[in-house]
Structure formats: C-alpha cells, structure tokens
Length: 314
Ligand SMILES: Cc1cc2nc3c(=O)[nH]c(=O)nc-3n(C[C@H](O)[C@H](O)[C@H](O)COP(=O)(O)O)c2cc1C
Image 1 (cartoon, rainbow, N blue to C red):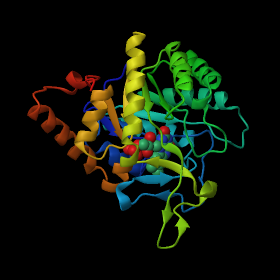
Image 2 (image 1 turned 90 degrees about the vertical axis):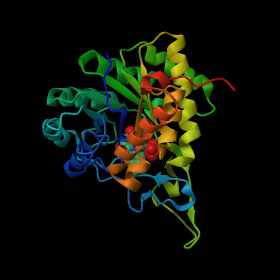
Image 3 (image 1 turned 180 degrees about the horizontal axis):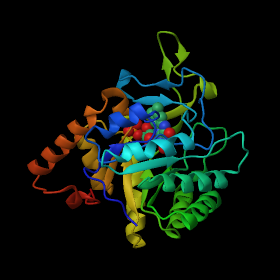
Image 4 (image 1 turned 60 degrees about the vertical axis):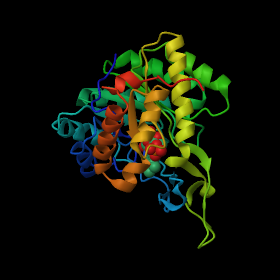
C-alpha cells in the first residue's frame, strides 16, 4: 500500500519535530507531509548535553547523540488529530528504547503502532536504525527486522515505512535486510539514518563537539550525501530487480535543490530534510521545492516522476 506525498519532500524525523509547536511549524511550511520525532513507549529526556553540534563550520553538517528525547507515544496520540487538521499526511515515526515497562522491543513497536493507527496517523515510519542508543540498531539484524515487521504488519492497516541505517561496505547484510523486506507489505524504505560512529573536535576548545557516548555520534548533512545516494540507489535497484512495490525515500545530505535531484535520479521518489531544516527552518522546504521545479523546467522534465531512478551509467 503506497502513500502519496506532494510536493515529494518532507522533514526527516527528529530535527525540530518533538513538540506540538515544532510540528505545527512543519505543518504550516511547504512540506508534503508532517513526520514526527521518533516516539518511544515511555517519554524520554534523551542524552546529556551537549548532544547536538550543527554548525555550517567546515560544511560537514550535524553530529548528534540525542538519545531519542520525545514526549512518549501517548502524548503523540493526542497531538495527531490536531496535526491532521492541516490537511497533510501525518507520518508517525516509532522507535524502541529501554523503558520502565521493560517491554521487549517488538512489543513496544506493536503497542505503539496500534495506538498511533487508532489516533489517525496516515502512515507509520518504523525507525529501526537509531545509532545513539546502547543496543545495536534492529536494522543491523535481519531476524530482529523480521520480528518487528511480522508483529506490526499483522495488526496495522495504514502504510508502513522503514527507516534504515547505511549498510556501507557490508553488502551481504544489505542484501539480507533487503530480502527480508520483500516478505512484507511495506510502502517505503527511508534511507539513511545518521551515519553512525562519527567524531568531530572543536579546535578552539580542543574538545569533542558532543558529550554522550565518548563524543561519538551520528552524522547528517552535506558530508553524508554520497553515502545516502548509494543506499538509495542499491535499494532502488534491488526492488526493481525483484519487482517489489516498495518505494525508496531519500534522506541524507540534501541542502540544495541539486542534491534532491540526485536523490531522485538515484531512485528516491520522496526526499526528506534533516540537518538543513535545523539550519534554515521551515522556509527550506519552499526554497528546495522551487529549486527542484526550476531544475525540471530548465532540463526539459515536467515532473519528478520522470527522473526517478533515471541515473545513467558513466
Ligand atoms: C538532531 C537530530 C535528531 C534526529 N532524530 C531522529 C529520530 O528521532 N528518528 C529518525 O529516524 N532519525 C533521526 N535523525 C536522523 C535524520 O532523520 C536523518 O536521517 C539524518 O540526519 C540524515 O539526514 P540529513 O543529512 O538531511 O540531516 C535525527 C537527526 C538529527 C540531526
């Protein structure tokens, strides 16, 4: 089951999408959908600060170890009907995390998914790939991916997206995960989550730029664009080859319209914006969409659909 997003550009889950005020700001922008922060079973404070470094310094991007600060799914269930009044699809991102109720991750996803569907969300984005929790992300283990998808797809009828980690140079794992996805009715894969295990240093203070996890965090922004393009492209190729009706949504490194065009050419049908939204705020969506349309006109295309997956071999 698919979900139509127009314009084909949304915020990426996380940056400035935690509170109702932040989500309302997204709803009022030119975004094609409203994507919530990944919500967990219990509310979370997240990791100690400083936990986000997001300066244009060096044009690298953002480095974070937020630790999923969010209001908890029961609060989001109350907010969703209000967000729906803006007339755009509301996509609820869901994650598992250690919690006072001690529910296993699969049960957390199942319970949250059921409640959020009931609250009226238009789609769920299962964040299986948070790089900043203690456990290895579910996205790195095909059995766990299968367990979560079996539990959620059994009960839930609204479209389901799956947010994945970059698989970088582990093609065997990429292939196992991609094959696992074929067994389920999934609307889209969103790739990539932050590139894990990255470090940066502020030369003025000679300190690591963030505190949690010994300074290691997930990277977003311009530095990850080629990584994201590669993940988008290999999922797109894989799904084409296996005639799967799973769309690929491109996330990672988009700060200019040209970056989004590259994602479309690589196979993305929707793009999501994380770090740029932190830097520029909601007008980023309007600027990017205008730039994309201008590029299409100047290059003789009439719609984004004509570009999807059309990258040529060198
Ligand atoms: C501050 C911050 C918080 C994030 N929180 C989440 C989250 O809750 N859920 C999620 O799926 N991704 C989260 N991400 C990852 C982004 O959604 C996105 O995948 C990543 O930043 C790459 O996109 P970008 O290059 O446009 O930033 C977060 C990223 C940042 C910078």
